[in-house]
Image 1 (cartoon, rainbow, N blue to C red):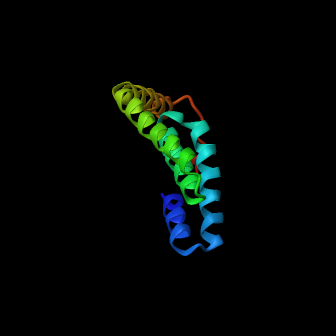
Image 2 (cartoon, helix red, strand yellow):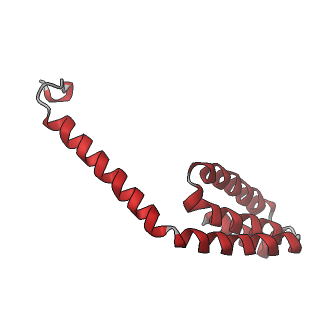
Image 3 (cartoon, rainbow, N blue to C red):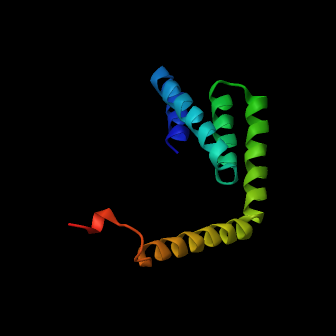
Length: 113
């Protein structure tokens, strides 16, 4: 969210340091979007829309705002599936962790003195 604030501060102050900070945050969010599109894509569209708006590309900003809204709606519909996948992964992780720590044949150097 600091990127959104930086774009707003840039528009209010016209200070280039806020533009640079906002652009850095947008680049970082693009990297995150590649790792977790389901959770990040709509936020990335919003950041890109704010970037376009801040640099007075109104047509592009409007298009990106609409993409952000559509993406948020689309991913909200998949929320049940996402949570199911998250809990299934969590259960598998916890099961493996318990089996690892309960297996007495496994060497655990951090427990030896």
